[in-house]
Length: 70
Image 1 (cartoon, one colour):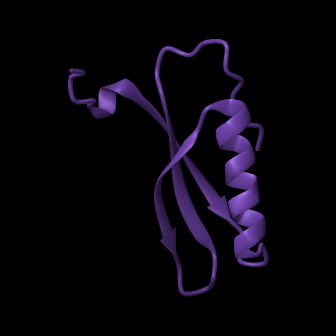
Image 2: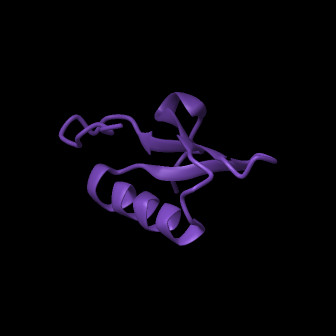
Image 3: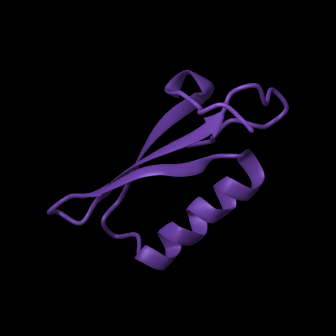
């Protein structure tokens, strides 16, 4: 049985998504980042202007995974 994970076990990265980007394009972009860089969606927030703020997380201890290129 594994122990519960704390926030110290993860790196977080905020990402702002432009309102002109469609929901399906956003989902595809986040899926690619998840598959190739190890990030997963931790939280999502949609603003009144249509923009989105998402927080990505990945477990620490993966030095071979590349970082996000913004």
